[in-house]
Image (cartoon, rainbow, N blue to C red):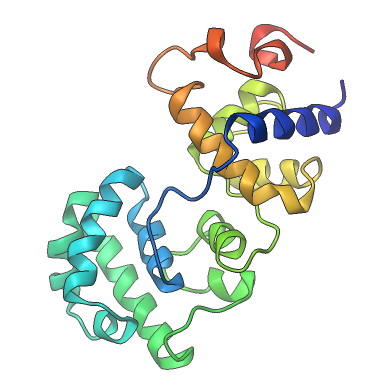
Length: 212
């Protein structure tokens, strides 16, 4: 089975297993996803979803958050870890959105990458979820699972994993595929415990089990 064939089969099976998988960060406006994605670095999405409730209750708009003191932002987001750097990036990012984009978020990948604290993973998530564009989000689940399954060969660097997946994942499938990897990585192909291969829908085609 070629990597392209394997990719299509993995996509098919994960669709059947997780038909309604979507972003696990809660947001109702695009700029809020931008904030949550920054807070999610080295933090669980579940915790971020709780913390941002207090943040948005106090600062309900881009303008309000842009005008907030970094220390005030840090005091709220501290439970997410790396509070100072995250607060600084969020403050700087909201100022740019408020002053240069009329409170909206930029629509191109390159413009997103120029925002403070926004890397390729975050930019891809926003392009896929907000704008419906082709996207591959190489978070820890994506990197771990694609290596285990055999879609990539012992590649750990996020950008290199992304570039390898672009070659074998149909563009229209990329964003949803990555969301489904998150669900599968949390429920079955876990990181902190032994993977639950006995209940995995990919068991018979996974490279981890010696399947070529």
